[in-house]
Amino acid sequence: MRITGHLKNYFLRGLAVLVPTILTIWIFIWGYGFIQNNISIHINRGIVGLIMFLENDNQDITRESLNKILVDGYGSIAGFVIALFLIFVVGVILASVVGRTLWQTVEKFIMNTPFLKQVYPYVKQITDFLLTQEKQEKLVSRVVALEYPRKGIWAIGMVTGQGLKKVARHAEKEFITVFVPTTPTPFTGFVTVVPKEEVIDLDMTIEDAVRFIISAGVVQPQGEKCAGFLPNAEHEKKQEENLLV
Image (tube, rainbow, N blue to C red; front, side):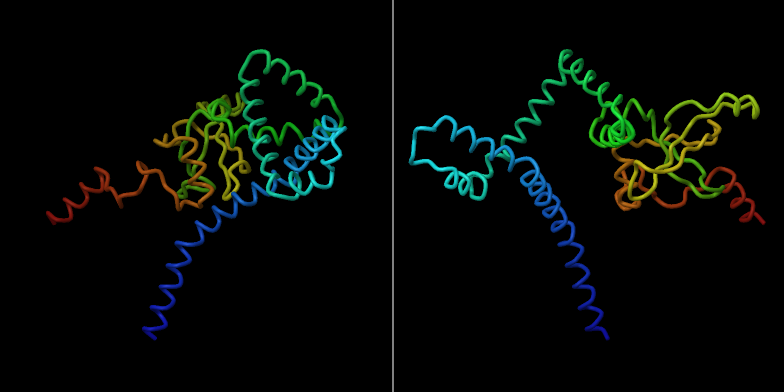
């Protein structure tokens, strides 16, 4: 039994080391394949067409030979590099006033197009939240802990705005709107309106909170790691009274 237990521990330890590495490599390979199959291949075919147009009089160059090199061969990496460069160029252009103005015009057209306007805004919200730090800071002001879904159970939430006016007037309290994300997809969850005094501000960035939620609590910010039970003053007083008795 002890040998079986050791073998099991060795196997699990090996998995714990290899699985993150394998998954990381797989994600990069998948991303490379996605770009190659959906973007790079069209860029490479465009390069082939351009070369054939420029070298129209040269009979030594054939479309088939170029396809073997640039589309199906080692030259296909050219399209991948160009795709990454184009993404970088788009980012530079959108950083300028002119680029942002042009993109706003494109977005207005999309938002006024049937079917596209039903899908694009939601996709944009997700990608902006995951990829753009400025959007994260705009949408979320701070990370808090609140008792949800019931008293005694604490959840991580993100403050997204003020509470509802009618609720505040009825309860005669100051409320805030808190988004409680779900694991492992932090862009879905529950919107709660909570009294301001019933939440605890956490010394945690939005990125730390997202990592904490995606990892189901495995990846914890250094400053938020629990050091065990910390007795409050009332608890310490009761302990002292028990000792005196």
